[in-house]
Length: 445
Ligand SMILES: Cc1cc2nc3c(=O)[nH]c(=O)nc-3n(C[C@H](O)[C@H](O)[C@H](O)COP(=O)(O)OP(=O)(O)OC[C@H]3O[C@@H](n4cnc5c(N)ncnc54)[C@H](O)[C@@H]3O)c2cc1C
Image (cartoon, rainbow, N blue to C red; front, side):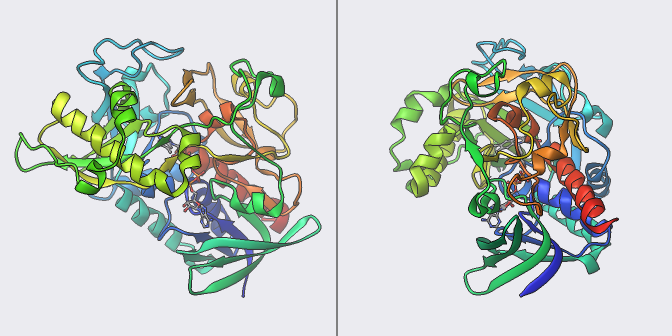
């Protein structure tokens, strides 16, 4: 049995931000994650970069400072204007593409730009972003957290099992690593699990899929469906020993029947390719599989997705002149979206476009962002915003429990709002805002 002030389920972007503010405010905090360390999608799914966009000051700057002091920890990359072929049919808001057939990707490489340049939303082909090494990122988080180590306990390798509630309070959660089981009692709980496993299990209302226009009158909404943002298996490549090297597809993946993908989507796939500080490259294929197909396939999805990655990589090497590199790692599934809380306020596209929540006077804005609404896969779209918007604390508040907050991509957003708000730096910031709110309201800090 563990007793603590605050328990956070999930140590990804939202969980890291939240934990940082809580331990800094002197609150005893327990972080539980089924992964082996901090980082979530940023480390384990290979989303080891920060998209251009505004952010409140906070932990991201401290992380940047720490990472830039490490050898090959991070660097600012700039988009190559020629190889920025994001969209050959020219959807709203994107640059038109000219040479997709030659370079079916958007390439970003080491540059002399500074970190502040990564805050700016500029036309895609001029954008700058921060790329870091995932191992360095884990080190950086742990070093920063070590300054407040007396307040932090972590249970890595532990998965969520169940919770106990009493009226409008979460009393405890039970977690297990397969051998040991722990019941954690806390005054406040934060669900930063991405898929909001605690909030759903406790009985909070949630949504899944695409809202229809009739739901919230969002300007870009169409019909209600179970469609969710697509899933990508990001992979890493390194320079091979010879310039002519082409990887063999491993037998177990070559044997998977993915003819439909090879004959269809594969050659239309667009990738974000970003140089790592050590000269390797990160390839984020957009996408590997439609989101609902991925979830409906269950346990079979991973093998099929990895077979698609290998087929796609082979296509890039044999038809798009990417010889001389070797695939070194396929990261865990990158899930952009699943379940979303229906909390005290549901952030919608019109709130984003207005720059503020239109239907409430918020107690506190916990993060700001200005990323385009960005949906990958079938019926995808990318629409830039004209100005930044604020995310209110009410998007993190559950209606059902006074001591349960959600600080992750599964917070109270519509499908369209989530496609902008879910980004790494924004989620770190949202976690921080939620942490500060809890420290002040529950513990008078
Ligand atoms: C392919 C892809 C590309 C993207 N590209 C970019 C990009 O270029 N730039 C950008 O800024 N953002 C990008 N994003 C978005 C961004 O990476 C995520 O939205 C963000 O990292 C989500 O943070 P989070 O804290 O909500 O969730 P996560 O980082 O997923 O953290 C959730 C944590 O909860 C843990 N957890 C889940 N369930 C349980 C359980 N049952 N028990 C215990 N622990 C549990 C997980 O292990 C995980 O560590 C991308 C996302 C994807 C998928």
